[in-house]
Image 1 (cartoon, rainbow, N blue to C red):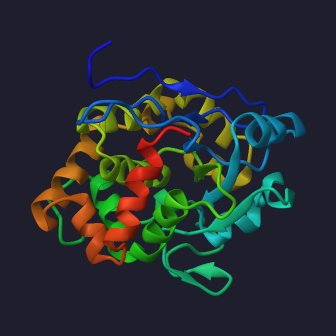
Image 2: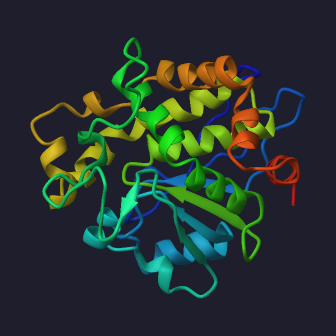
Length: 270
C-alpha cells in the first residue's frame, strides 16, 4: 500500500452497489480521514429494511445528502431513509431547478448526463470536465449546503452523499470535502476512480428503471466508468482559477469557520 492509497471501505447492501466509507484516505499532514464521518453511495430508493438498519445502526448515518434532480426524486422516490426519524434527508440538486422540473431536464429527457451542462467557456476540456464545471458554476449553493451538512450533520453521526450512480455529482462533492480535509490529491482521485470497480453492477442497476435505462442500454458498462484524469483536472482548474478548492468554496459562501469545521469533522476521530 503506497502512502497515497487506501483500500476502499465498501459497504455491502442489498439495495445499493456503490456504497463506501471514505475513512482511511491518507492526509498530507499525516494520519487519515476519520471513519464513520463521510459515506458515499449510488441511489438509495431500493434499500431493504436490513440495509437501513446497517446504515443507521452500524454506520451511524444521521444525514443524507441527495444530489439528484427534483425529477429524479419524483420518478425514483426518495428512498426509505426519509421515513426514519433518526436521519435528516436534504435534497441539493446540482442542476438549476424550476418548479416541478428543472431548467435543463424536461419530462422526456430526465437523465442529467444526457444534457449539455455548463462548460461553454472550456471548449478544450472533455465533456466530463465541462459538466463538472457546470455543477460548480450553476449550483454553488447546493455544493456549499452539502458541505455544511457534512461538517455539521443535524443529528451528529455520519453524513451519506449520493446521486444516481454515486459517481459524478457525488464524486465532485466528496472530492471537495476531502481536499478541504487535507487528503492527498492522488488519494482523492483514486477514491473517485475506484467506482470503476463497481461499474458493471451500477449500470445493471440503472438499467432496471425507465428513468435511466435509455441512457445505459446498448453500451458497454465501461463506457460509464470514471476516468481519474477528470477529477484531477477539476482540482487543477480550481487551483488555477481560484487558488484552491477551499478558496472557491470560500468565494461561494462557505466561510472560514465552516471550512475549519469541515476539516475537523473529517480528520478528528470519534
